[in-house]
Structures are given as C-alpha cells and as structure tokens.
Image 1: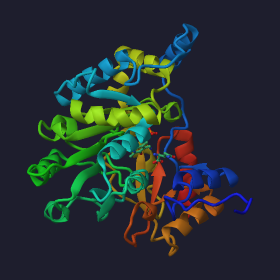
Image 2 (image 1 turned 120 degrees about the vertical axis):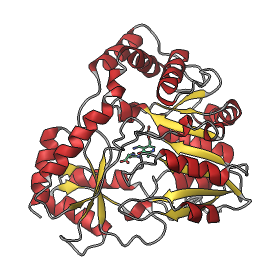
Image 3 (image 1 turned 135 degrees about the vertical axis):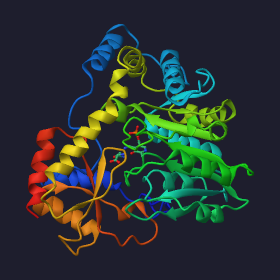
Length: 386
Ligand code: PMP
Ligand code: GLN
C-alpha cells in the first residue's frame, strides 16, 4: 500500500460547506452587511447572561444528566402546556439537545432505516437531507411553489407508499417564511392516520410567528403528537445562536429511541447554560411571549425601508427571514446574484435554489432581519440603490 494518505470514498458525495458558512465568509471577505446566515447582531437578555455566570461561579461545571437538567425539562413541559394545551412528562418526553440540529439528526438516525422513505417539503432546511442519506433512507422532496408555498394535500397523499416512515415538516418555515395553519395539521393527520408514519416537526421559530391564527404546533394536535417529535431551539428564542441548546418533545416510546442516539452523539449538553435557560424561562416568560411582536416590528420596519427598492417582497408569516424577488434588477441566477450582491452592493443574502432538489427557476433571495435597526437601515439604503 502507498504511504500517501488515502482519500475515503465519501458517504456524502457532492456535499460541500453549507451555504450559510459560504455566504458569511464572503460577507466578511467583502465587508458586506451580512443578512445571509440567520443570527442576530444584538445580544440576548442580560438576566440570562447573569444566570450563566452565576451557575459557572457556583461550580455547575460537570456533566448534566443525559436527558437534560431537570429544571429545564420541567420549565419546557410547563411552557408546552401553557401554549399547546398538553403537558408532556418532563422525565420521559422532553430531551435537551445540542441545538435543534442535534435533535433533528438524532431523530432521523433513530427512526430511518435503510430503504425507508422520508418526505420533506422544498425549499427545505439544509440539515435534513444529509441525515436521511447517512441512514440509507430515500428522501422524497415535495416542491412547494412561491409565493404561498402551500402544500397540495391530495398531491401529498399520492406521495405516500407502504415504505413511508417519516414526514419532516418545518413551521414557521425556513427559508420560505410561511407558516402552516391548523387545517394543514388536520390534513396531515387525515393523510397518515392509517399507516405507521412518524412526524419530525421542526418548530425552532415557534415564537416568531405572525400568521393570523398564530403558530400551529404539532403538539397541539391530540393525534399527531402521539406520532411526533417536535424540535425547538433556544438559539432563536433568546438571541443566543452560539449557545447551541435546543430540545425535542416526543411521546415516551419515541423519546426513548431518540435518547439512544443522543447519548452517543453528545451524551449531554452544557450544564450552566441549561440551568440559566431554566431560570430565564421561569423569571421572564414575557421574553418569548413578546418575541413575535418584537420581530414583527423589525419585519415591518425593513419592508418599509425597502419600499423604494426594485425588490419585490413576498409575504412573511414567520421566522426572521424575508424573501425578495430580484427579477426587476438582474437576470443572473440566484447563486450568482447573491455573490454579485455581496461583492458589489455590499449586502449578503442567501439564494433559495440551494434548498431545492428540482430546478428552482425563481429569482428569490432570503434576507435576515434579526438585526439592529441601524443595520437594517444601512442594508435597505444599499438595496434601494439597485
Ligand atoms: N431548523 C431550522 C429551520 C433552522 O433555521 C435552524 C437554525 N437556523 C435549525 C434548525 C438549527 O438550530 P440550532 O442552531 O439550534 O441547531
Ligand atoms: N439556521 C441558520 C440559517 O438558516 C444557519 C445555521 C447554520 O449556519 N448552520 O441561516
């Protein structure tokens, strides 16, 4: 054998660094205003940071329990009851994970067997497909169409087969910025009720929803929640994406399987951050209660600031992203346009086509408005010049 280092046959051929990493790096390189990767340019609550420091100073610096700190699991169970009318058992049905990313990966790994079919809706968040692929699952991606990105339920039902194992949904949805209604949950249940199909519901933007009926959680549906793993993230809720603490709520049998993966993926999650988050949930519930209003104001301010631009803004029902159609400005495809925008206009954005399997001929970019007003104003000024 040659002494040169071998190149392993990739288990994920064709996959490169995520679009978020690529565009943030490009933004930095060109000193552009970074509205690409989704993270706030302002800090989280002072109380949360104080509690983190306090717990560190008190010596809460060893492994947390595998399933998560009890105080945090209990606070999540109480919040779930308050919001969705059902109280999960904090011991057996709530698991703390290293961000939503780990919960998604653990859930997919626990459920998907080689040859199983998994359904998701495009444009879909980038972490689902590689996880399904690593498990040997077959991903069936249903393409939703702008501007409403609505699921055609008869069409969805046609995609089901005896091999369908899991449906992955995301509401409010990144990157389309749309939200499911309660009727969508009812349609989903009607479609899958007769088969052993599970649901992975990515609800990391549960507290950033502007839709009329509010956020429709899978946990509020009495039948669906018996089949569902609901995932959320404190990164979004408390403006702390770097803390990487998330969680999932699922019935005991499903949680047991997710925990089997979780205990060998990370085993447990940052102890002082969990304790601080538990304190925060108890002491300042108004933070998450007012989060939709906080981001609605940012969304409206940004839309207003873009009123004189040639971008056409799509409806935004949730998340902290706004979609914009740039066809009045350029004929470039969306990836090329985002590169041009970063380099020559000084604003970084995310192209939509990278979230889709089928060719996505629309000229749409995603702009993150989780930014200080001054940042949004400067970005809008640059975009209005185009
Ligand atoms: N799902 C969606 C839809 C997201 O937008 C994100 C992050 N922006 C995640 C999952 C991952 O969350 P976390 O950072 O907590 O891992
Ligand atoms: N979820 C964030 C977004 O949509 C990015 C997270 C990441 O960089 N992996 O922008």
